[in-house]
Length: 121
Image 1 (cartoon, rainbow, N blue to C red):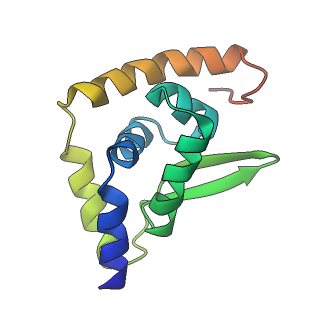
Image 2 (image 1 turned 135 degrees about the horizontal axis):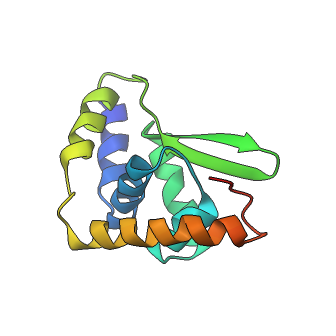
């Protein structure tokens, strides 16, 4: 039950739901791409990634000084897989999710030229 509570707490915030939706749109993003897509600060992005990772919904991988985040699609607990399937279908028609995805398209182009973000897509 404790794991389910962590998951529900992680899902109870709009920013965290928005992060999940853009991670769903792209396989993997660094913090700079997340913050640009959601138009939020780096500290806010990082602060909201923590509970998602703690709940097992998001995983990260380090590449030098950069950390890349993606949706954890592996079944790490009895709830994770079912919730990932539900999240795929939820909120797709929300205006904020549509705007985030549009900004994400522009963010990828900007990050390719930006020396602060090493992302080469």
